[in-house]
Structures are given as C-alpha cells and as structure tokens.
Amino acid sequence: MMQVRCQQPMHTASGPGALELAFDLREGELLALGGPSGSGKTTLLRILAGLIRPKQGYIVLGGERWLDTEKAIFKRPQERRVGLVFQDYALFPNMSVREN
Image (tube, rainbow, N blue to C red):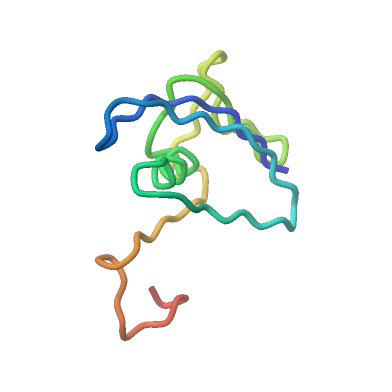
C-alpha cells in the first residue's frame, strides 16, 4: 500500500496556491491524474519521484518510509525506483512505450 499525505505551496498562472495530497493506493489499484494546467499533476509526480521535497507530509510505500518531514526522512530519487517521462518533447515517435 502507498500512503501519501503532503502539502506543497505552488505558484500557478492564476497566482499562489497550495497542493494538498491525501490518498491511499492499495496494491493492484491504478490511479489516474487529471485536471487543468497548473492543478498540481506534475508536482505530485515530482514529489513521488523525490525531485521535489514537499513542505510538509509523508509518503510510505509497502511499509517503507520514503518521506517524513517531521522525522527528517527523505529517500533520494535514485533510491525510489520511480521514473518519469514527460509528454511530447521527451518522447521519440518512432519508438514504443517500452523503448521510450
């Protein structure tokens, strides 16, 4: 199971705001992200990958604590085994999903 509880200030085109995440994802479940530009989709992915350290919160995956701001725990990106491929510019149209 993955447990995520995080808060992160954001600066969007419409002004300052905050991303507040609170969800549990059980093994075998899928999660789809949707929303308008600036709603925090990429920020969430960057937090999960360890590219952004949120202001407050925790992430636990399978009992292993990746992040806990109160206990000063922060697993480095290379220790998380999470990969990101951004749409459009980073993809090669002549390659399959697996090859990209």
